[in-house]
Image (cartoon, rainbow, N blue to C red; front, side, top):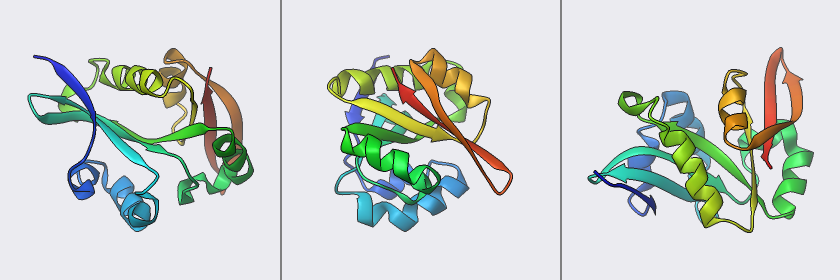
Length: 149
């Protein structure tokens, strides 16, 4: 069974509704404003979405903790990766890593960055060519900004 990567062109809610509830709520609030410069990229098998994420090319609300850095990175043609997600039944099959590899190939002239709120995710992103750039704390919550190498 072949894995197929593509820019998602269906109704955005179909993809968004697959995400965790807190992600859905945050994304639905801003999607209309940012949809013109953002791309949902999915990984499918036999027409079913197995994984996906969003490439952002402008500021979003979830970048506010790193606002200055985000403005600099976006101005330097570095795109933000957000909402990378793999269906639960297929986790552990390297699909998230394959998605990141595909994105880096498709946007070979760009670098990438992302933020995480779970420290345990650092290892996954470091394994996939990202390195810790900055750590910040807000209301006793830590968040990390990682950049592609």
